[in-house]
Image (cartoon, rainbow, N blue to C red; front, side, top):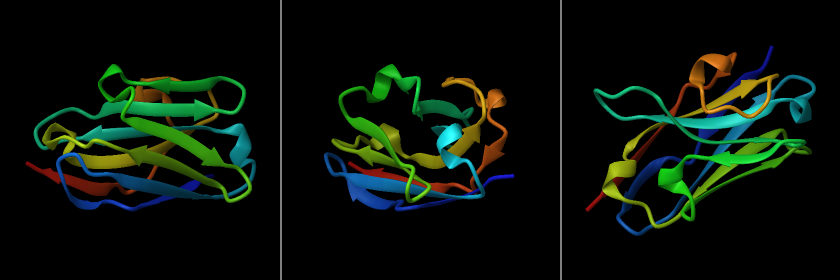
Length: 122
């Protein structure tokens, strides 16, 4: 079992930055693929980025060059650094974990956090 708790969301102006954190409890954190997804009102949950220690990093095209996913296995934490934020980035951001390889498909992730709201004003 893995429990995930996100933090770091908030209100920011367009062009600004935020860093989301996801703290994981449980053992073998380094063995998990960790991912970030976002869900805007009325839309489906969308893949943002994922990382596995042996499989590199996978990012959605819409965030390449702006968002960076990283992890600190010693702290059981995964981060999402979000730069040059746009109003269309406004969503609830969820952290997720899977024992599988990096994937952009939400249904392959077994564990989810409660989400953190990111709002970008124009």
